[in-house]
Figure 1 (cartoon, rainbow, N blue to C red):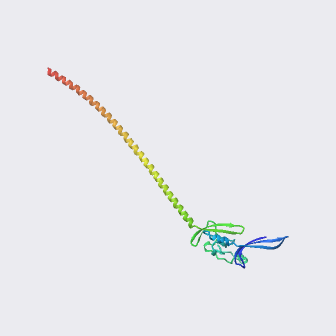
Figure 2: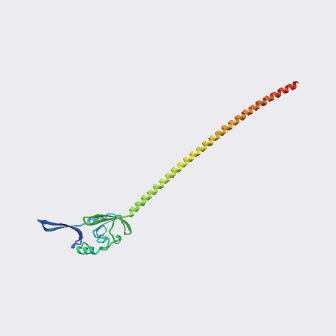
Figure 3: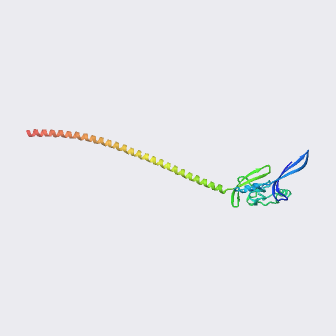
Length: 234
């Protein structure tokens, strides 16, 4: 009791989406109500967006799109059976030409295609009720530019982090060297103090020995004076 069909009007030559509804009463079909919906408004909106949009039917033929020159072109060659259906139903001109950038196959999400010399990323979504597929082609140049900018920022951040690490390592190294120098100076100072104390002890002992020798000489001298006096007296 319901039908759907996309095609170019036989008299108006304007493409549209046809919806048909059977009018029944008492088990009898009294007639069929048909409505034609124009979809060019969607194409006008898509034309203002970056990249490109297209809708393909079950035969991978572009029936809607933001690029008029792609309309009613196929993404892949049609089989003989598909060409026979197109010839019988006449939804669009028979034997549509294949778009050269499509690669001869239906577009898949994540696929890269080159359109007008620029790389594009494909995002595809299915419309099961109509057996259509919507594809968006987004230029990769802005994404590459953003990726390069982010890579440059990451490189700069890594360089800054490396400089900070190097500065921290140098500071730690200087600190260790300072500690080592201080330790060496302290060891030298301790050694010098030990040597001074030892030398002082030696000098003290020598001084005491010299004092004892002087006292002994004084005693000898006194003894000599006494002897001399006795000799003079004698």
